[in-house]
Image (cartoon, rainbow, N blue to C red; front, top):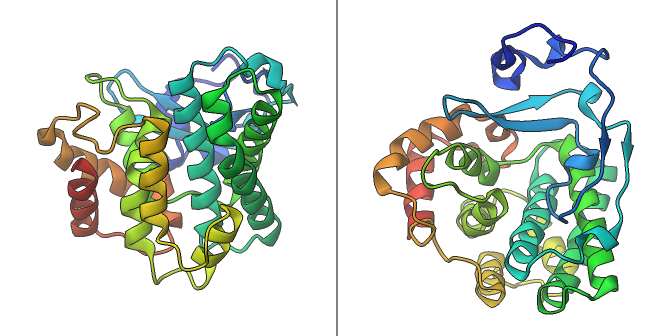
Length: 271
């Protein structure tokens, strides 16, 4: 907003703001201290407005001019946040890979990022001083961010409105981890052989139940098993359904999601 006229919300993607963002944006140098969001290489910014809406602002002009990704800066990240942000990276790699948009290069990057994260997230959580694990997790986060060009899906369409709640304040990566199994079940049968390739990247058998595998990984990492466990009040779910339908990530889910589908998905994720 230093170089663009207000109001801020007019630049949100779902409000037609993409073309309004110009190259006049102030230069940005990004130095991540967590390994998860990938925002240091992303063209999008997710902002929570004062009215609680969590909106996406998308433009190639928002990509940082320079990204300095140093694993040393993540060594002090506590185990829980290591797990939660690491699952954020995993969710990014999975969702972008499953997006129906055609981008073979991005898909290859997503699979490599998933491979690195799946093999090192446990090590990073157990020993935060493991420099190799920290390096691989940061690469996975960067790769997940690079693949945002394909678009995300229903996991993020659901987690964005939940992340906009004023009370309780909910962590984005943790939300993605909790919601991911339900969406994987929903999308099964609508992605060709992509689940087999995801399983291979994760070091699992081709016929592995991916939703169950993610649930087991969440449990192993000490993450919550449900939205209820995170403290989400059930009475907010109808508003979250509306938020998911309006979210920019909804359009790139591999299986079209109706209002009734989101109601069922939120109900399942609630536990």
